[in-house]
Length: 281
Image 1 (cartoon, rainbow, N blue to C red):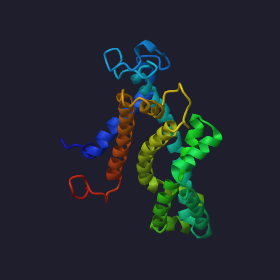
Image 2: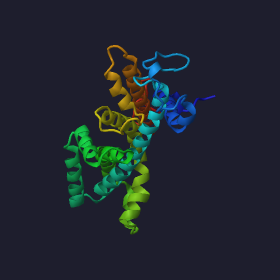
Image 3: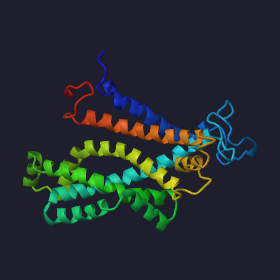
Image 4: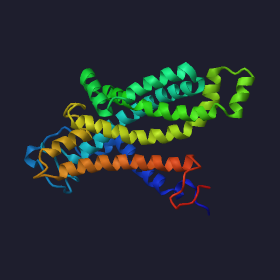
């Protein structure tokens, strides 16, 4: 029995398992967590991992496993909102810019260049500092930073697709620009959009964690991976596992979505080389 191509892609399988586990943890956090995330137990602060506390406790005696599980819900909520909206905005800009060309392309791409000119983290920090902490505000900051990637990639694909015979045929029969863009061009750009979105989830997780680490994320006692990592650094000499576990959680989550993106790229783009060195069939 022949194994499906997707299951033969190691990056895709490992990435799907890791990212799927993170998503499931976020969805079922109340059932997976073993303690109330806000419950303090000062008698058992900095407890080492044990049967009672799988990953130990933090400086307030709160169960670290429970806080990381609920932190996944915060990170995934922000990541999915920001990726979805960034993909929509960037895709529309890229399609319109690539299809019409001329002054429309110049205006939209110069606006894109303006946003690309700002250091991403500095721009996100400035937005959150002005708007204040909150899931939607943090997601908005990440959207402002990340939509340009979709616009650039979709525009490049559209410049090639608009010269194809089926697009020219649609023009010849009098199809409106909107119909050509959304019925003819958009379906043929799904591949790079899906790959960018899967990679974008990892980028959004890092951005949210960085904002929380620097003190611009959701305020305590809301459990976030960035806050957990930041608090852990205060005690890193005596209690290093707090930072190690929080940092490893972020690293593994981002790695999972990056592997998923690499695997999807290999599957969706026939020009990519397989891991074995031969051309994809």
